[in-house]
Image 1 (cartoon, rainbow, N blue to C red):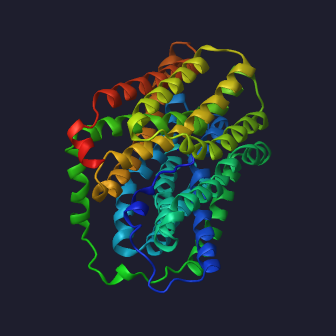
Image 2 (cartoon, rainbow, N blue to C red):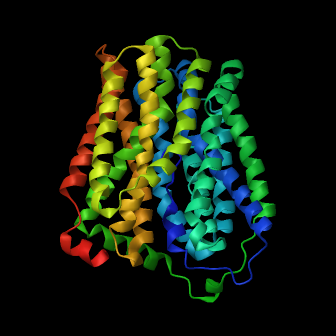
Image 3 (tube, rainbow, N blue to C red):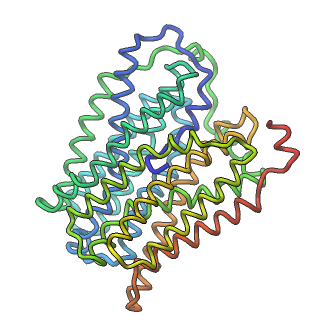
Length: 427
C-alpha cells in the first residue's frame, strides 16, 4: 500500500488481453523497466514534502496548516485524475496517455524549483500530482497485457519493489542534498530525472499489438457510467471509507510529518530523520508480499483487516503519547510494517464483487485511497494549526487525529458489509 500497490484496477480489467504477435521477452522487460522509472519518480514526488518541510517553513514562513495543504494537494490531484487516466488508457493506450500527461509533472517540478511564493508552489504541486497519476497504472496495464496471466502477481511484486526505489531516494539521499544545497535543488533534480524517464518511455516503449485492438473501444461517458453502478451497492461505501484512511494514515506521516516531528521533538538532524525515513521505506517495500502470503481467504479476511487497522490506529496513538526518541522510532517502524495489510484490502475488493466488475471496483478503491490521503493531510494541517495557536503539541494532535480517523474507518467497514446473498452469488 505505501508503495502504492494501487492502480491495479485497469490492469486486472485488461488481463484477458493477450499480444497478437508478442515482442521478445527481453524487449518486453526493457519496456517495463522504462515505465517503472516513471513510477519510482511518482513515489519520490509524493513523499518529498517530509524532507523539504523545514526549508519551506523557513523560506515562506508556512504554518503547519499550509504545510498540510501543500502535501495534500499532490494526493488530491493524483486521486481525481486517476479515474480519467484509467479511461484514457482503455481508449487511447498507455504509452500515449503517459507521454501526454507526464510532462505536467516536469513543468510542476520546474515551477516548484523557481517558486517565488506559496501560490506558485501549490500550482507546481497540482501539476505534479496530475502528471504522475498514470505512471504506475501504466505499469500494471502493461504487465497484464504483455506477460502471462499466471505471472501477473509475481511480476507486479517485482514492479512494486523497483518502483519503491523512489521512496528510498526521499530518505537519506534527498536529506543530504537538501541539507547541503537547499530544498529547491531537490525539485530541480526530480525534474531532470523526470525528463530522462520521459525520454526513455518515448524512445523505448512501444506497445505490442493486441488481439483486442480491433475491437470497438468504449466511449468516455460509457466507461464513466460503469463506475456509478458500484456506488449504488451499500457495501462499497464501507470498503471505500476504510480505504480512504488506510493508506492515507501511512502517507500522512511518512510523506509529511515524520521529519518535522523528529526534528522538533528530539532535535534530530535532517540527515538523521532521512535515515529514519529510509528505514521506514525499506520495510514498506517488502511487507505487502508478506501480508499477501498470510491472507486467510475470504472467510476470515475482513476480520483480519479490521484487527490490523485497529492495531495501526493504536500505533499512531502510541506515537502521539510516547515522548522518547527510541520508542518513537520503534513505533514508526511498526507503522511501516503494519502498512503492508493494504494487500489484504485489495484482495477483499476483488472478492467483494462479481468478476465482471472487479476492475472498476479496484479503480474506485484506488481513487478513494488518494482522495482520502489528500483529505487526511489537509485535515492534519488544520489540526496542527489549531494546536499551534493554542500552544499544544501539534504532533500529538495530528497523530491522535489519524488514529481516530482509522477507528471510524474500521467502524464503517464492520457495519457496512456485503449481504450474505451477494457473497453467496460471488463465491
